[in-house]
Image 1 (cartoon, protein in one colour):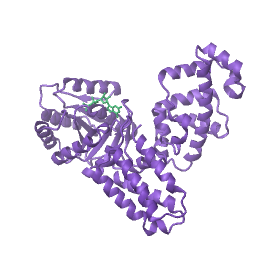
Image 2 (cartoon, protein in one colour):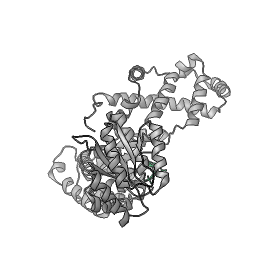
Image 3 (cartoon, helix red, strand yellow):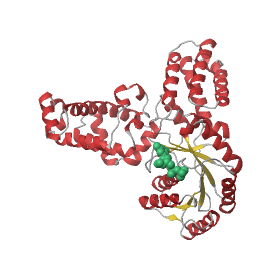
Image 4 (cartoon, helix red, strand yellow):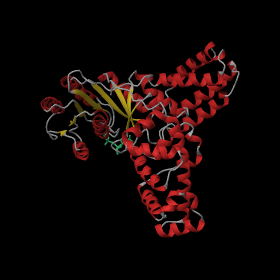
Amino acid sequence: MAFEGLAERLQSTLKKIRGKGKVSEQDVKEMMREVRLALLEADVNFKVVKKFVNDVKERAVGQEVLESLTPGQQVIKVVNEELTKLMGGEQSKIASASKPPTVIMMVGLQGAGKTTTTGKLANHLRKNHNRNPLMVAADIYRPAAIKQLETLGKQLDMPVFSLGDQVSPVEIAKQAIAKAKEEHHDYVLIDTAGRLHVDEKLMNELEDIKAVASPDEILLVVDAMTGQDAVNVAENFNERLDITGAILTKLDGDTRGGAAISVKAVTGTPVKFAGMGEKIDALEPFHPERMASRILGMGDVLTLIEKAQTNVDEKKAKELERKMRTNELTFDDFLEQLSQVRNMGPLDELLNMMPGAGKMKGLKNAQVDEKQLTHIEAIVKSMTKAEREDPDLLNASRRKRIAKGSGTSIQEVNRLIKQFGEMKKMMKQMTGMQKGKGKKKGGL
Ligand code: GDP
């Protein structure tokens, strides 16, 4: 998970000041020294770090903190607000042209994830906003790119416009937009060519496409794993093309997160989405305030709830919620729930969105993969009806029988029963937090 190192360091630094009833200038100075190091280590641009540290310091030794009743918590609030501001403040939404189609040019270096992200964005627009996008294969230099986009189109059952690799990208863009108008597509997503490095020829071509396509958005796809390089690439593209936003990919990976924090501050271009995995639905709108909360260990309950809203059957969820509240959850529900949670994304990622989840050691590395799920299913199915409904019945000899019956090991059975208990606890927490927070904002 991205930001892990940074999150751990910031959280342990902030813990020291959290409960303080009195905060001196010296306390703030010491804290900020550690915050500065943590940010630099996370590969945040050094100029950005310097400004951030100064801004926080100025506010943290000001009246707003010193005169408050809980200065320790107030300092953390300041850090949270400044971190949010650094990443752009408000969420930056994707354009929606008053006269369709809205044209979006996807640009970026080779391997950044441009083609994949084009598919993800098309899927997002359809799934969450009921739009009808046309994807356009304009990367004629990498023949595999056209094929890749066409495959994504088939997988999604969405149209891809392609004229092969013998027609110029400018002509492809022109014809695609005409076709989109004719067929009433409300979005056109143009997947352009990438190179290994920024070069003149590429930039000229992108400028030419821009001239004919008059895009409403030019979204730069950058690989978060490349850290400072991602920020440099963003600066280069921005100088030539005036990009309107960035999409950071591979934030699910082991990136230190510096790019996510620096892109907006260095280039003035907001991050609009984050790629969180290779799967087609692993794209999240980038919310600076939620990201800051995640980094500071305050969780991201809103994203969690939104994910639940799009992936979980509401009627079943309501029944499940009732059972959770009354602690009636059975292993059958667990099985059902697991398959729904699996649709929401990797469990460890979901857990990171829960406040304080980092501290729940047993859950931190919990992961559900396909094979494990099959085992879990076999284990649950080897239980009697009574056992499924009342896990307390599961003594050692019953566990042994279940392991044998399901072709698994006692350890696996034990682990599942333990996870079930933890899940019950976690679900109870979630239902508690959900109240009154489930409202979705409008717009794209
Ligand atoms: P392009 O050359 O920019 O078009 O890059 P591709 O779309 O072909 O992606 C390059 C690789 O990055 C592929 O293996 C993708 O599956 C992978 N990729 C793209 N986005 C993400 C992401 O958000 N997370 C992860 N883990 N992999 C990604």
